[in-house]
Length: 114
Image (tube, rainbow, N blue to C red; front, side, top):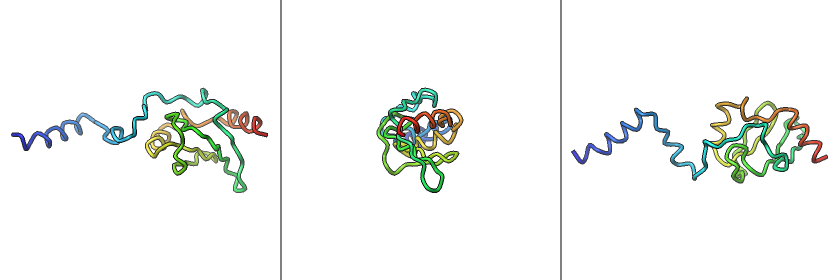
């Protein structure tokens, strides 16, 4: 019986829909994402690149509010977003309409830095 318990536990958690990637996510609370309308503009320093993409140059992940990793980026609708990890990118891409910044917000941030 003892040797079957780990298999039983793993199977039970899988059937219950446990997301094991969330367990490995360095402590970020993915239940506290904020929507794009609540983004602090002081966190952004957007710059338009020669190829037309806008680099947000955000210092904090828009999803988890942790420092960005410097290696996890995702371009959505011509805007390059920085994230703290791949899990935040995955969650962003599930509902970009909820988390992506509006053009109005990006324009405000760009005029702030001009």
